[in-house]
Amino acid sequence: MALEWRPNDPSFTLAGQILVASRYLTDPNFFRTAVLILEHGDGALGVVLNRPTAVTIADVVPTWLELAASPPVVFQGGPVERTAAIGLARPDGVFDPEQTWFSLAISEPGRELGIVNLSAEPGDLSGIVRDVRIYSGYAGWSPGQLESEIQAGGWLVLDHLAFDGTFDPLTSDPATLWNQASSAAASGQGVRASDGPSVQNN
Image (cartoon, rainbow, N blue to C red; front, side, top):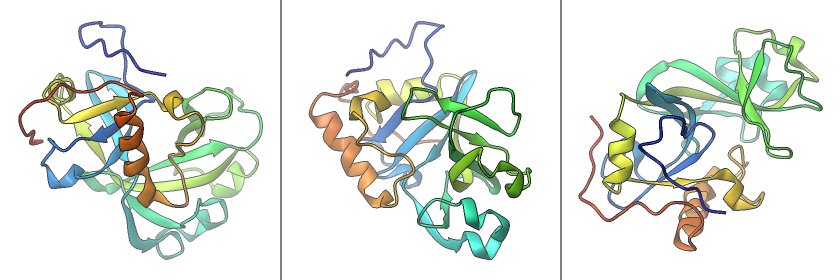
């Protein structure tokens, strides 16, 4: 299932989509990365999905360990504000839109994924979320910057539906994510960025 890239459509959003770094993206912050876009409008914000660190959840936020996804380590979410933390998780059971601690970024049945408020008490979220993954920092783009990088060939945009359930943003083997996304791109699932010059993030 291909995603139709419509950069000039003001109603179009990349939120909930996957970016895969192309060979044209030379910024070391994003070399061979897969990024989940969480917000897209006046700029964009997302997290790098495939950069686990050696810092364990038990060492920094042990109260979240029981709900943590495997591997139970902190991931480097991006180069911006690395002291800030963002949590992603799956709903545990039926998602309740009335609760305030968890909001969905991907809402398709069987693929639900959302942002969990890490200021909550983990015990209060038992039965609400599972597979919590914590990211240090995030990837951010100013208005128009991400669109320019895509059009220059820096990123390939992939609809998460293109993976037919095989692409798991919270996989226990994150080293496979970039190869999976690249393979999907090579087979035509998603939007091919046009050939362009090397792209550097500012």
